[in-house]
Image (cartoon, rainbow, N blue to C red; front, side, top):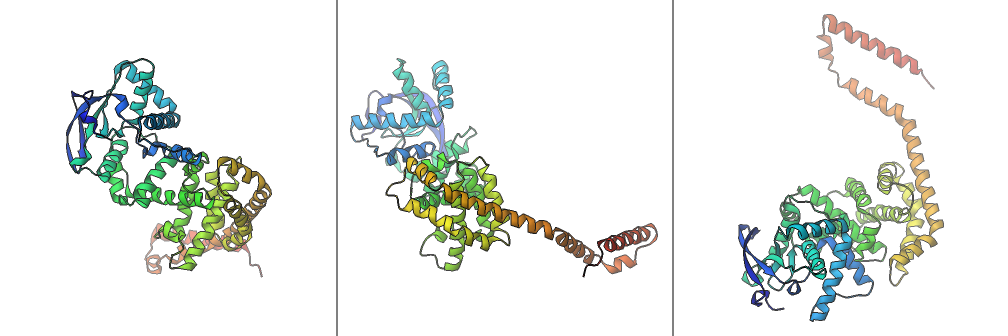
Length: 419
């Protein structure tokens, strides 16, 4: 595409917008740009799941001709509106009344880097007969600005500035996965700085994104991120990371999932636990339960209990049935997910019984052992008492100590002596 700067219809304004690029902050000129010279950014994280569904449905996004570009913009326009119609309506009404207050950022070829929502509102106002233009800074990638600089700027504008970010959690995970794991564009530390978050928050998001990708592969639905969005997986994935971190905290979840992993024993443990949790998420996705809490309880009472190995062995057949049902499908769609769910209803019931029974076994065992645990804790506390300090006690302190000892002896006698 040619540079929109060459178009006589692009007009310079008196406006400026301060941007930080390559660690240098300065004011950039704002231009008044006709809407037909611009196009949406298909890497916009807010609509990643919508685009994945569009591709899955057999459509493509081309923009080589003016006709293709119009169809491309219409499709992404729909996704942006569907992603948050309330925000679109509010922004649209605000622009109608007061005009576009915050300039966007575009590249010289017309790609919008910041301002996709404002552009959507302006397109709708244009269709309604309003005489509107998009006001934005125009960045020239031929002047040393590369894709990494553009992405850093985009992250900073969307996350770093003090304005609300209305990302769907799954769309955000797709963005994190692409930028850090897939394209290796940023380190966790760099991403944290650019998005004004703490490194541990980004580390959690990275691991969640890895599990999201692996879950879709488990379902034979690679790259179909809209399935993860429709299943509202953010909470369950968060619990999965917490569960897996107890055994595999310092390990890369992607390496553990790949066939070239060096430690096969550790990899086997990881995959057995991961797949059991994936299966529980799928089979209980429509159950009238709090799925996040359910996975948390599985972690506490099954994965991190004495029952773990027994549970994993009993649940293995359920995992295999679910996994194989998806792998046998040539193409997994939302309809296929529903059909497999219905077909596997007996398997789901079997799995639920196993999970509930094993959780109950754990709770009963813990309740039975509770007195022993408390007594052992009390014994450990008693052993911490320094005898020399006891011998130095005088007056009221000594009387209080002796009184406590008598109470302990009396309590022990109440327990009795079972043979």
